[in-house]
Image 1 (cartoon, rainbow, N blue to C red):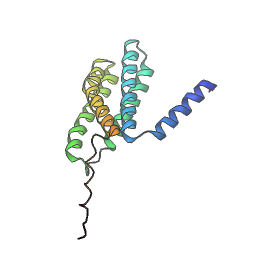
Image 2 (image 1 turned 90 degrees about the vertical axis):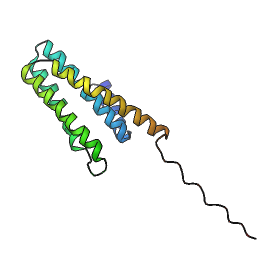
Image 3 (image 1 turned 180 degrees about the vertical axis):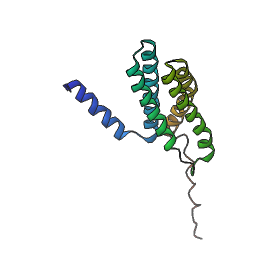
Image 4 (image 1 turned 90 degrees about the horizontal axis):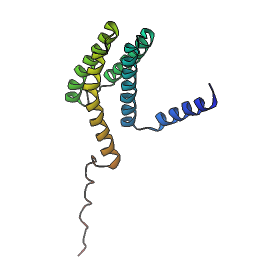
Length: 144
């Protein structure tokens, strides 16, 4: 690995280790979208090994989304996200098996708005907009 590549890899490692969970989620979405787009290009250029590698990576990210759903904390959200992620996994598999980029376009169509919603939520948290108001201080005791 050459010096610039080592520096970039180190920067990436530091970026992930210092990121909030929300920022990591956004990075995973960005990585998923990159894999999907690269798989679409590989399908168009008939680069079968690249398609397989990129779709495998996309499936791994989608699988991570599924296993990280915490049904005990957010059951309604998880009940909505699980079938969405499963649908996307099916579309990735279909694209790989049929060497057809259209199902990958469906993945982007479904998940890009979700990523944007997560980005808004992460930004609001960073600004402190979702925090509950601090409890008011107790009334001052007067002596008298």
